[in-house]
Length: 394
Image 1 (tube, rainbow, N blue to C red):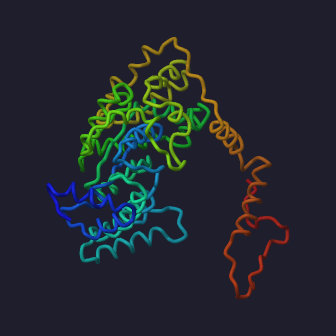
Image 2 (cartoon, rainbow, N blue to C red; image 1 turned 180 degrees about the vertical axis):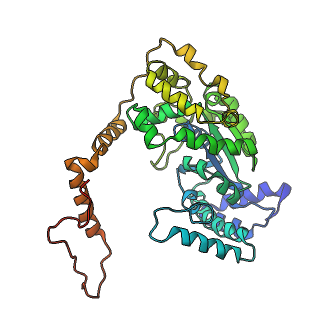
Image 3 (cartoon, rainbow, N blue to C red; image 1 turned 135 degrees about the vertical axis):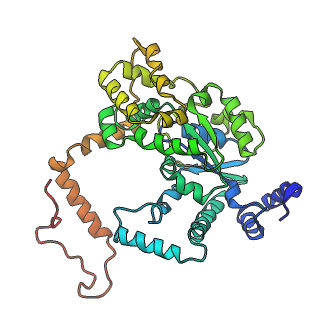
């Protein structure tokens, strides 16, 4: 396939073929200077509850961008042992990691060969998914990728990275209200996402190991047309201002992970949630104390790279003083979460915990792949008392 001035015509030809035929020919004919799957991938990097689903829908409204609910292709292969470990695996993960490193060291190209093998796996899956559309780019928006950015940027150094940040306390407030009924203490104990995501993403924003486009949520919702034009320019796509009205243009082919609460209620970005966190913190001293603790745990350099210098982090509190805290979100999703949290609380010490363990045991028995021969003869052997043997009574 030709490069340079004739590349656009070639791409149009392959797109005209449609589906898998186009993808197969592109990947078989490609050279180092031609179109590759890596050149077709866009990663949106962000923490949870930072507006990434909103940005995904806006970018996905472009005529050349296809997307899918959080694929999670990268996180599992980032923990095979060479870069990070699977701590709870059905094998000795320490020995496996050392053995894998030794094996990779013996490859002709070393780590480069290993990354190429992983890239072929993900290239094939991304390419196959893209082939189901008539678009030229695939957008992967999976927040967990923010925690494996060094690996991802080694795997795809020439992909496009749109890095979305939001005020750290707005992220945490949205997280606590979406999944923990506004209980900041429980949300923090379960997952201190601010301390996890800010340093992980700030490092990439500061060091720029690959070219990227940094987008701040507050600017995105305040000036969506200008921000989209800037992002499309970085992606090498023609500007389509109408993409801001994602409610009219975005085609959600399948439901899946993403924002289950707010983004579907709007057809375009709104600024109403920008400083909700400040009203919430101003009305609750205990949340204010936790907010100070979280920000104190972050370095000045990380806050600066994230886009919210330490001296400006709590500035919105001055305007929020005296305002009523935001009302809690009530819908079927938050009700399900409320029931699950209530059932999960002290589950090992409450009567229903024993019932759940017993049900889990019988489900494991029913779903187990029993041998067709051997001493058991395929029969299911249950304990005499009919209960899980060795189960803790906690």
